[in-house]
Amino acid sequence: MGDGSSIGMGSTLESGVVVEAGAAVAPGSVVAAGTSVAAGQLFSGSPAKALRPLTAEESSRLLAAASSLPSLAKVHKAENLKTFLEVRVALCPSFTQSVQSLAHGSFLGNHGRCWGPERGGREREEAGGMEVSSN
Image 1 (cartoon, rainbow, N blue to C red):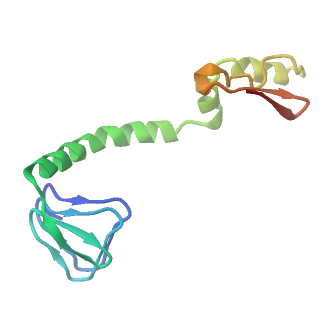
Image 2 (image 1 turned 180 degrees about the horizontal axis):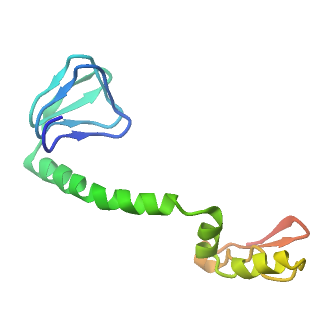
């Protein structure tokens, strides 16, 4: 792969494919073995073929998107290292109180009531193991 080249998500590059500098392969494309994707060209399809030259604006957008990927990868990694409990508490701080109540053998607390207007306008509560919705 050459500098500034871009491979779309879900694309397949078979053995021996060369993607030259500034070239782009559209998402979901299948580039056949031994194909050379020319510099500054957009390849698309299955099998992928030269669709057209990239415009200057498209090339600059692809470079800008590529430069943001390392920081996005760090955020993605941090979010995916969280446990279920960490995610649940972040979405519903009162969930911590519910867990503490359950740990002490009590069913008092705010079980599952973090679904009010801030979560899409639908309120939910658990009553005896059944979910009750109010619209």
